[in-house]
Each structure stands twice: as structure tokens, then as C-alpha cells.
Amino acid sequence: MKIRWNKQYTTISVYALLVIFAGLIFYKFIGNWEETKKFLRTLLQTLSPFILGFLIAYFIDPLVVWYEKCVTKMRIRKFQIKHPKIKRSLAILLTYITVLGFIIMILAFVIPELAKSIADLVNGLPDLTTDIVNTLTAFIEDKSSQFDFIDPDKLEATITEYIPTTIDSVREFVPSIMNSVFDMTKNFTFGIFNVILGFIIAIYLLVSKEKSIAGFEKGIIALFHEKTSSNILFILKDSHRIFSSFFVGKLIDSLIIGALCFVITAIARIPNPLLISVFVGVTNMIPYFGPFIGGFFGIVLVFIQSPIQALWFALIILGLQQFDGNILGPKILGDSTGLSPFWVIFSILIGGKFFGIFGMFLGVPFFAVIKNIIDRHIESKYKKRMEDKRQQELLDESANLP
Image (tube, rainbow, N blue to C red; front, side, top):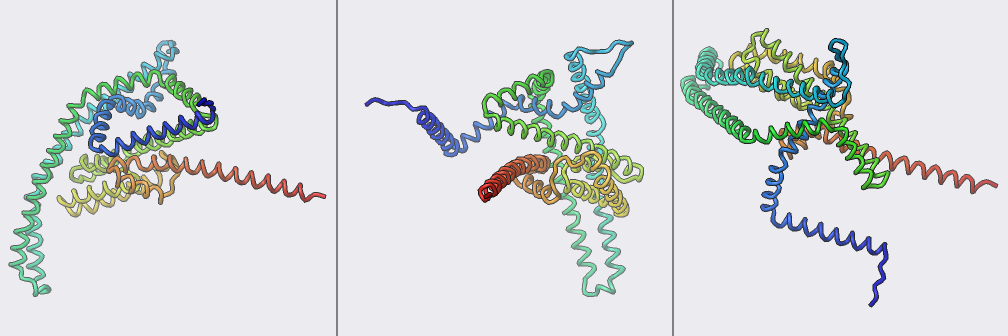
């Protein structure tokens, strides 16, 4: 039997084989899920230096761009650096010095102070137990006539028994947290080689970023049709705009809020100002819920040592939140994501549910990208539908002409 090859049927056959092959791979992955997870974990560990290098390059690129502009404007005895590679190399060097200096500052000042604050808090728990027992006992004795149905001796014995037990549980829980932190630090130390490789890879990516981006765009244009490639490149550029503006803006905003919190709490003599301010600054990275989480944590810590100062701290946090929400945040971030408050809360809840704390960080910009893609698709379909409708109306009008 003679087979006549047809280009159309050949294309269909190739697509059918590809679908069957993809289905077999999918079945293999799902059918041996434990082996699949092991394979993915190994693959992720192997690629982790490259992933880390890409993330480092992506997040420090704005600082590299800023330093490059400064180097371009800089003059040394009427000598100006004009060679692009030299300017880029100097900008990367200055950026790495800045990042390294920031890390050294954290290791030298912030971490020891945080450890001291946590130790002071744990050591102060016995005195707190005594104060709570004495306060409640005095209150019961003073108000015993109003609460004659309560046996003061029995209640005092219950309080005396259970409060120290609760405090002891807290004291046992805090060292377990410290042990977890130690384990994380140990794992980080074992992964220091990947971090060093990541920084080296980031240098290569930053030096040749224009060439890499141009090559990537050329590949997209070569592989896809004009309309598809145009849409892909637009989505990628818009995603970059959303992620970079959101993270850089939110980082600057959180650093300012954390610094202001430290200065104000230190002046007001609030206990553990550095520990509270670091937590307030970090949680401020989470939109909407972050300030409340940081504020609640700080109020609880201060209340343990001084209920009156906890009230003052609550007022300080309220003032900082109003300043951030109405003045600082809009000034720095603007409308970087284009999401309404409802969709921001929705994306945080969904991201936190599936991916934990990182999902809460990444949920807003990721959902903003998806929303932009959907909006762009709907707008394109709507315009096409309106254009077809208009053309049909013109045809109907021309058909009705005498």
C-alpha cells in the first residue's frame, strides 16, 4: 500500500504523538509521586545556585542601576568614566560593598541586640508571675464583698498553681524557638557554598543583562507568531514592572517604618525597642495584615513588662499605621499593583493558605500579574466584538440603502 504524505496530516500526527508523550510523562509523575517529589527536590537543590543567582541579580538590579547613574555623573579631576563595561563593573562592585556592609551591620549590631532582648524577656518571666499573682490576689481581697460567691483562698490557690505552670510552658517554648533558629542557622551555614555561587552567577547576569534580555526576546519572537510573541513580551515586561515596583517600594516603606518605630519607642523608653521595631518593619512587608500582626506582637511584648507602656505603644503603632497608610505608602508605592482592597485581601489569604508566609508576601504582585493578563484578554475580546458589531451595523445600513 502506497502512503501519500500530506503536510496537514503529518502536523496532526506530530501533535498527537506529543500529546500522548506528554500524557505518559504526566502519568509517570503522578503514579510515582514519592519518586517524583524526590526527583524535584534533587533538581531544585541542583539548580538552587542558579535560581538564587537570578533572584539576587533581580533584587539588587535597581541599586546597580542607581550606582551606574552616579558613576556616569561622577568626575575625578575632569576625568569622566565613559566606557560602559567599566561603569557597570564599578556599579556592581559598589552594590556588593553596600549589601555586604548591610549584612555585617545586621550581624554585628542587630542580632546581638535581638538575642539580648529575648533573653531579658525570658529572664523577666518569673518576676512577671509574681506581679500577676500579687495583683490578682489584691484585687480579689479588695473586691471580695462584691464577689461573695467566689472563694478567695481557692481562687488564689488556682491562680498560684496555673500561672507559674503557664509561664514555665512559655519559658520552655522560647528555647525551642531558639533551637529552631540555631538549626536554621546551621542549615544556612551548610548552604553557604550555594550562596557564594549565587552571588558569582548574579555578577555574570548583571554584567550582560542587556545581552541576555535581547537574546531572550529574540528567542520568543523566533518561536512564536507575531501577535503571540508581542503578548508574551508585554506580559513579561508588565510583570517585571509590577514585581519590581512593589518589592522595592515596599522594602523602602518598611525600612522607614521600622526606623521610625525604633526612634520613637527608644525616646518613649518602651521596652525592647529594637526587637519590636524589627518585627514591625518585617511584618509591614505584608499588605493590610502586616501592620496589625506587628502591632499585636509588640503590644503583647510590652504588656508583659508594663501594661501602661503597652497603651502608649498601641498609640504609637496607630499613629505609624495612619502615617504609612495615608502619606508614606501612597507616596512611595502609588498604585503599583492596580488591585482594589478586596483583591489584595483575597490574594493574601489565598497565598498564605497554600504557600505560608512567602505566599502572603508574593500573593499580591502575583495576583496582580494574573489580573492584568485576564483584563488584557477581556479588553482585546471586547474590542474585537465591538468592532465586529460596528462592521455588521455598517453592512446592515448599506443593505437598507435604496
